[in-house]
Structure formats: C-alpha cells, structure tokens
View 1 (cartoon, rainbow, N blue to C red):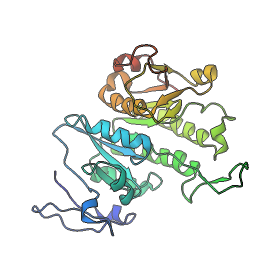
View 2 (cartoon, rainbow, N blue to C red):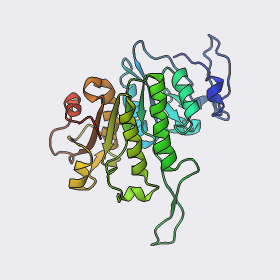
View 3 (cartoon, helix red, strand yellow):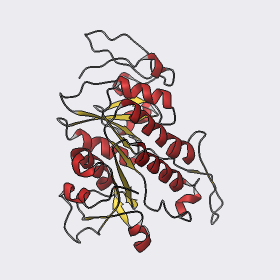
Length: 299
C-alpha cells in the first residue's frame, strides 16, 4: 500500500501534519497526538481499475458496515472513509481502512480531497445526530445539536455540497442513504430539527443535479445481521403510509450501497424505499439486479 501526505488546501481544515512523501519508507500523514499504532491513512493506491468510493459517515454504525462490505470487493471497489475524527476512526474501523479527515459541511476541503484521492463514487451515510440533556425521571429529555451539526447543516448543506462537488469532479455515481418518512412533515423524527425534511430536500437536489444517483430510504434501522431476510422495496413512502415505519437491519442497508455500485446499469438513477420481512419469512434477497430493477427513477 502506497501513502502520500495530504495537500495543504485540505490541511487547513484538519489536524494532519504535512510531510514530504519519500519513496521509502512510505510517507504517512499522522494526526497530532495519535500513537504510531493508530495511524489514519492519508491515501492508498487501489487495485488497477477498482473504483475509489468515498464514504461519508464512515465511523457511524451503518458506515462501518459499509466500509467493511466495500472492502470485501478489492478488485472492484476501494472504500475511503470520510471521518471527522482520526481518533474515532482508529477505534472503530479496520486498521487497514483508508481514511481522510474532513466534513461534508466544508465544501472547499471536500472538493480538495475528492480530487487528491481520485474519488470515483460517493456513498452518503452522514447524518445529523441529536444529543440529549439530562432530565428528571419521567421527564422528556431536551435535545440539542452540536454547533455545525444541525440537520440543516449536515443533511441539507452537507448533502448539497456532496452533489455539487460530485458534479464538478465528474463523479459517476452517488449513493445517498436517507430515511423513509420524508414526505410526512409530522413524522416524529422531524421533531429533531426537521431532519427528514432536510434529507428529502438534499435527495431532490441530487435528482435534479444530473449526477447519476441511487437513493436508498430505509425503514427503522435494526442492529442486526444482514443477509438473512427478504427485502421489500417501495416508492415515495408508499410502504411507510401502509405500515408505519417497518424496519431493516443496518447490515442490509450497507449491502445495498455496495450492490448499487456493483450493479450500476440497474441501480443508477433509481430511488427506493426499503424494509425487510421478519427473519425466516419469505426468501432471502440475493438477486440484487432484480431488486434494483423494481425501483423507480424519481422520488
């Protein structure tokens, strides 16, 4: 694996130390204060012809799964995790994972790293995450977002930045993971900063942009293994309106992002809602091309 230091335009927004890249030993850009055993890789050369895939939200629960599943196809796909914290990446990602420190809300550094790391496709798994203040027993806790971590900033402006950068860079596929319920202004999740509203707005912006896309809007996320259930697809919140918010394992959502990249002819310019049947009911989904063929091209 070859390494190079990140260019100064990116370093303005990170804590990396810029160092020259001699041919031997390999040069590594290290995060300040991170021990040698916890190095965040600045850049690695992928296998010939493999598509380099930037994964935003790579340290999240679904993002970690997507990184691992993408890495299982080294001849075709090379995951590059976009992370906000080198320390967090070292804790939760495979030590061999290629990562870059950045943020979807910072358009300039996002554009720089997409070019510097030769990104071909993007999987968007970043999302605003509310935090909760301590509350008295029985009282409803008050939520808040960290500065810059509000849904409007992360889900709308960050999503828009990804689309704009992808369009300028000529990226040929953006896989955007949102959530079912985006057509319902009264959805409970919209109590948290209108998060579904902003996700839906970013999705529509992607559809209108001309950038090839696959939009995956899952039901409620289960911390369960994927690959054990039959998946059911719908469109424009049809499933949500019929059944409320049925669920799907995170592992299956992560697998869908990978399969969208592996089946571009069937998956590009498609938007899908997706849930799973209970484990043991139905036939486990394995024909991904057929699944994507069932989806529609608009939100």
